[in-house]
Image (cartoon, rainbow, N blue to C red; front, side, top):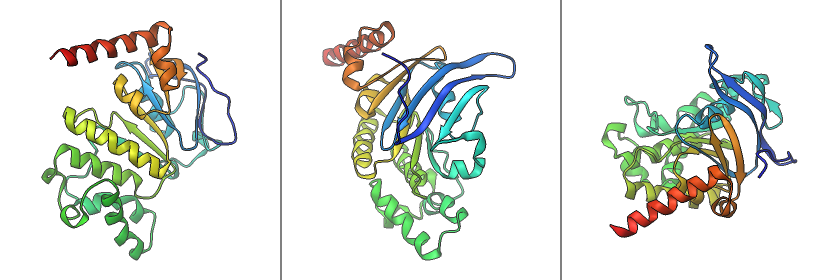
Length: 260
């Protein structure tokens, strides 16, 4: 299957033959081209070092391409003011990145305050968002991150990423540090949340089952190259070697779990 898809009027993110190399010359990405449509959840799947997190960071200009071009809503990332670009994009990482000396409310409302939202709107926003991610506002708004469980911190991280209502959401291994039961619960909640919000989302994971559950499409990376983009059913049925290896590992894991 072709790694690239044709751009259309609803294209929100586009990679055009993008490469990235470190200052010492090591190539982390090469020849990557794809698009992400409005409201789509694209999963970047691959082993550690495959280039998926590098690709994610190119979207919000935490890194800049060595070659090619990344476009957000039709504009190259280098043409955006980097601060304006990042406030246009929510970002969720594995350990949430919450400020430990801020309350949950202060963490969630950081970007709206920087954006100069009216005070009345700011006051109501934190409660709305905590309820949206399944946390009771009266119980959690004044807590600090160290008073929360891992799953609760991750929910707050998602709430903070959504605070300014960005059209794009990036998620880097968002559930990877959680225990299996909490991870399953948050995956289900994420699917329900996306059905309500219809954000344009790019998620990085190395977990095949997570990719199949969360993704509208799956972009498979290996050794810095994009090997293909698949619908979940296409991925499961693919005969291409890299995709087949992931599916075989998934089936082996399922067999192991059933045998316990």
